[in-house]
Image (tube, rainbow, N blue to C red):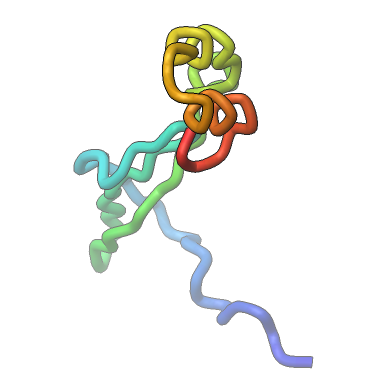
Length: 86
């Protein structure tokens, strides 16, 4: 059976990570651009960091749905069923 990953992908030498900024932010996580500098070269990586459960968006959205209750019958049904339209 072949190896799933090449053996040289692990970093065994000391390195330093530096955040370069946020690439994309969403409801549950953010993706950061990270520069990893080792003794011989520098890599650019994307690092996905999940937000704490209490900071995630739309976890408890009853207030949000309650505000938008004034609409057409079609819109009210979409909000209650949590469709993409609603």
